[in-house]
Image (cartoon, rainbow, N blue to C red; front, top):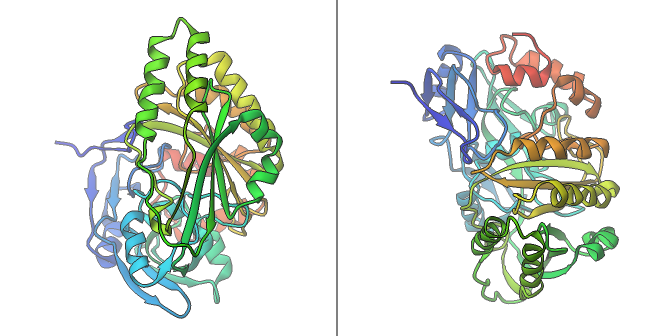
Length: 426
């Protein structure tokens, strides 16, 4: 009987010869040397591209998890790469530390989040990989290698966003901050106002993002700022109930689009505002049960509003089956060679489609808009770019590929999909 693997949404699947769960770095090194290739690494399966897909070996790091050590004075923590973000938050809180920022899903493994440049939102806040102080990984020969920001900054920048193709992460040291509280507020406003005041509103808060609800004409704005106030109850989350309502309206009113739009607009306008204070680990993450597929592009910051306006127009004119909100965030620039935020302030726009529907027509129609505005795709989310396209978007592309060849000279980590991304003939 063959092994089987699939990602969270079920869109990507594989039947490798071997699925392995090594208990430590030594077992992992043995696998890299001996397992049938290509060898790919699975985190929590929250990527929507075929990064993990392999007919050789898929390695899960679920047993290589937990806190290794921490430095209270420097607010640093060394953690194993298979640690999920949810448990990691609690481990850090227990030693008086906090992640400076987070996305809204806490199910990913930290290794996967780092490798795909996963991020939160905030014009001065970087993605997870910008917190890296040291990395340890097993290279393509099965050797354990260690690099630090102080002694090997280029290697940190080369391998911090690595797509699981520069070695298999085992441990990382992260630069965190002292534990903190956030005041989070949500409110609804017309999308025209949000697009007009985009730069002002996004810059006015430590962390800000917004969701556009298709066919509503309204956005839900979310602002988070540091607070010294006492905690207050977090309101009951109703995102899943809201999605269910939007799906029902889409299905029931397929032949009455004007009524669907009128009902959605009325419902969104009545959504009550939220305002609460909580410890950081009780703020960022949301419960995401309804499965979807996703495309996210990272655009030059100033291009965000115009690109979003075009995406909205495309969706509402040609894709009435889409009901998932669009998510818009900002990310600070960084120096990592394969980071989508390399040397530019970024506006990230994510579009989603119910996993029960074929996402490809919608995504293929939207992608040319993102590309026309200079977008770089999120490595873990759907896109159609190959090496020739990507090389034009990354100034240090050739340097990164040279480092990858040194780490994995026999292409142990290159599946056909990865080879296409990097322009390598297997």
